[in-house]
Length: 319
Image 1: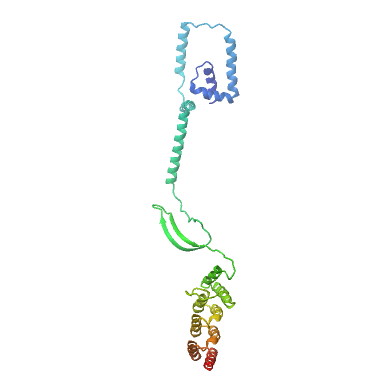
Image 2: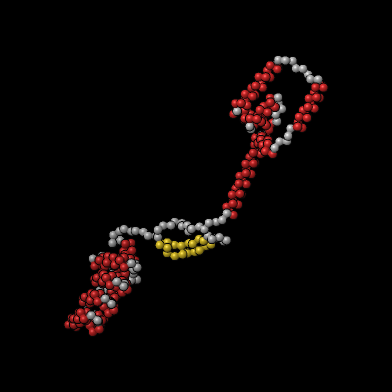
C-alpha cells in the first residue's frame, strides 16, 4: 500500500469507516512508514481538543444540504483506472485469504499441482537432444559379446546389453594350480610374447621335475606343451615345448608321437634337429626307426639327414 492511499485510509480507520479488507494492509503499512504514523498522530492530536467542546446536533436542513453536496461531489469524481481497481481487488482478496487458512492451503495445493503438471507438459513436448551412449559399470575391459538389444518405442533410445572381459591379475607360486592353469591358457594366447613366456615357464617346471604328470584328458601341463609343439607358429615356442617334453619321451607314448611328428613335418630345421636329439634314448623303438629312416633320405637339411642316419645306425647296432 502506498502512502497516498494509506493517508486516506487513516482517516477512515480513525472514524471506524474503513472496510475490513483494507484494515490489514493499512496496519502493515503503518508499522513501516513513519510519515503515515505521524499523520495518524496528528489526527489524534486534533481530536483531543475537539472532544472538549459539547456536541451540537446539526439541523435537518444542514444535513440535507450536506448530503446533496456530497452526492454531487461523488458524481464529479472520475472513475478509478484499471490498475487501481486491480490493486484494490487484489488487497481485498489477500485479506480474505489471511482470514481463511483452509482456503490458503487449498490455493497452495492447487498451485503446486498446476506447476507440476505444467513442468511435465513442457518436458514431454520439448525437443529431445540426441543422447550419447551411457555405460553401467563401465570398467576398462574388452567387450566379449552382445547379449541383447532393446529400443524404446517412438524414440531414438537404444539399450545394448553386453558382457565384458574384465582384466585381473593373479600372483602366486609356479606350483600353484591356479597359476599353472593361467600359464596353460597363456600358451594359447594370440600374442606371441605371452605364448613364449608361458611355454618357457611350463617347460622349466617339467624339466625341474615339478608337477607335470600326464592327465587322462590330455589337458594338463604336458598336454599343453604337446599342443604348442604341434600347432604353435613360432619356432622358438616349439623349441621350448620340446625341451619341456624331453624327460617324458621314454615313458609317454603320446609325447614320443608328438616328437616324431615334429621330426617328420616341422618346417624349422632347428626344431627337427632338436627332435632327433630327444629321440636318441628311444631309437630302438620301431616307430622311431621308421621315422628316422624316412628323414635320413628325404629331409631337405643335409645335417638332419646325417644325424638321423647315424641315429638309425646306432639303433641297428643296439639290436
